[in-house]
Image (cartoon, rainbow, N blue to C red; front, top):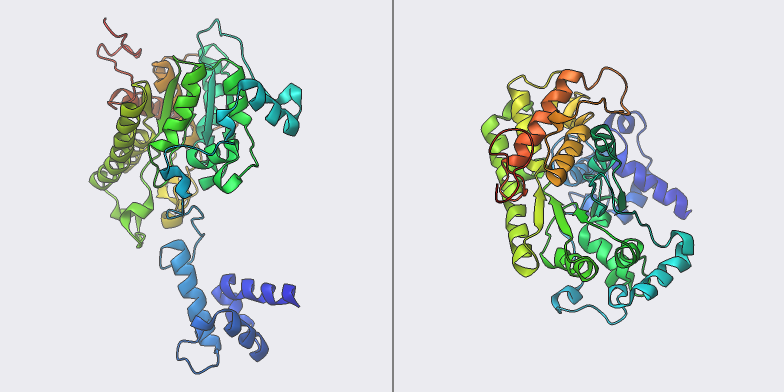
Length: 408
């Protein structure tokens, strides 16, 4: 019976309007729903009508999507509770990061086996950085395309990550998970900690998340620098998202202008520039921004000028076009833009313009899209985004497509 009740509840909250109209709920079903959702009884007469049920469902959908029309729930919470332990200035004594490298390796070996407990790469003759990183679905496109870009540039990219979806890929969440503290109390999964403590690494990368604090990053930096004093750190600043406009999503893409995108982009990049500046003050100056916000802002402005061949819209949930810059309310990238993010990662870390890569890149997309012309635009935008950001660590004063060396 419990299963049947839950099934009706799911139907009540998620069934399309036309389906609800075609198959009216019975009085018994309405009574069950009223017990589960008493707020649906708008006139408070103790009886749930079909009209009240449909109105309540519509209200719930609007609240979940942040817009008036039906659509997909964003899914990534922007407001959430954080364990008060983060305010104490120190972690519990059983935190894995406080243990020796041998102990950390042993803890993870019990979960995956001794052979897999530590991932390592030898120093690369090509000069490639050995990269370790966390992240979520905003980082996954770049993590997927960057190795392909590097291969075309003439070297293999050593990369080891611990990622998750949404909040589960945030730096705070991964630190708690790896250490076995707070929400993971005494249940550690030190996937990255084991390798950081027992192998050589040059770079760590992270994806951002809502309400980030400096301490979510300084803990990783301090642990890494204990074993690798010269390590560098990079934080992506994501890109403009619809939530910045408030609860109302534009009904039409004609709402957007180059000025609006610049304002949204500045808001995003400015917030994370401030965060990185605070992290630098507490740790090391070798903390940089992966300017994906700059890149997507430039791309959106280029689209409005008609300079992104093959791209048909701004956001799929507004304009309905599959080949859009973004595909949902939260802001996941549309098809093809994983290349742009990969180019930003490559350009920032290696200080070289993707435009200098002459060898073909083996992409996974179907032939014909993105076109070679669009790919060239992505490469140009990525380099422009990187060299124009004051915290990317890359400048190109002579315009040769290679980052300037300090002192020259």
